[in-house]
Length: 205
Image (cartoon, rainbow, N blue to C red; front, side, top):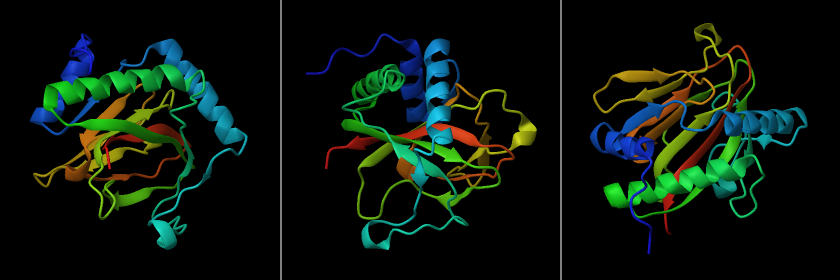
């Protein structure tokens, strides 16, 4: 049995905004010391070459297509998180419980990875749901880029059901969430490396 709905008003606000608009962005949800630890750890992982080239497709059709997707990734291990990752994953699990109890989504788990886009790379318009699977339900992206300026680029562009677009600046501490199936999106090129922890609240398969 799940605990009562989280008392954290910021998490409830995320749930209510997703229910009304389908997407949201919040800042300062992750405490400054925890965010700083994630930034230090993620930067070190990138500099040490711990990330691998991201690919497009699934199974036998996986391939590296940097003109489509240019990032490098390192998958998180939810069963053995690092000291920097553990508080953030605990916060995400609290958000999962809140979304389930406020919106009856039946979310089972979170899967995610650290993603780094080198300068001038991008991810063309796509949807995060895999063909043939409805597991990925809510996308959550936490940005780890300190001192990001408008001229740096690298925005997350969401394609709204209305036909309009909205762009989210990847400033450290910003958390973007959206209903996975409803929002195609793209990552625009940036003039400097761009880091984020990207993941999905999933249904049980």
